[in-house]
Amino acid sequence: MQIVPASVQAESGIKNLLGACGLPSDDIHSSQIGNFFIIQDSGHVVGSVGLEICGEFGLMRSLTLSESLRGQGLGTQLVEHIEGYARSKKIKSIYLLTTSADQFFARLGYQITVREYAPAPLQGTTEFESICPASAVCMFKELK
Image 1 (spheres, helix red, strand yellow):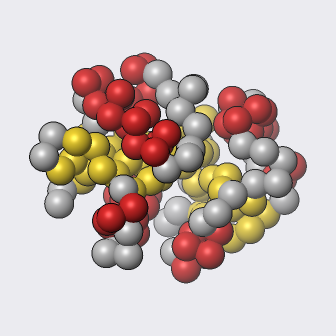
Image 2 (tube, rainbow, N blue to C red; image 1 turned 90 degrees about the vertical axis):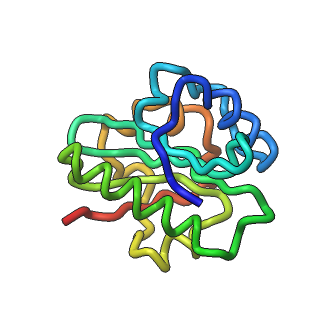
Image 3 (cartoon, rainbow, N blue to C red; image 1 turned 60 degrees about the vertical axis):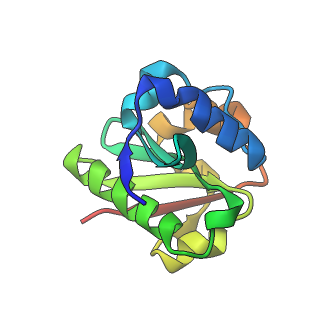
């Protein structure tokens, strides 16, 4: 399976996948799709990851895989892909909020931080302000 840039036509597939995985999708709009990447199988979106760019910081968004594809290394490939994309955009560090995948991200070099220590531009995003609960774990990784 191949990771490819998401097209505007993939927006509904991304939202459907997020919904099936119990993740929010209300704030994903076609204007953001240019910073999303997907994995497709038989024309269906089965994996996704996005990056919300806030100056020199990135907020990883919507990392998900169909349940049947988990445990095959595709999630790691999606993370590595978005990190490479972030580097190409001169992003210094990537942050994320998670309610269930902190151990997965820790294995990939992400460190837990206090949510309030995240850069101000990220704290102004919808994900920080209202979508992710206060109980979500905030993590970051410096890019080299």
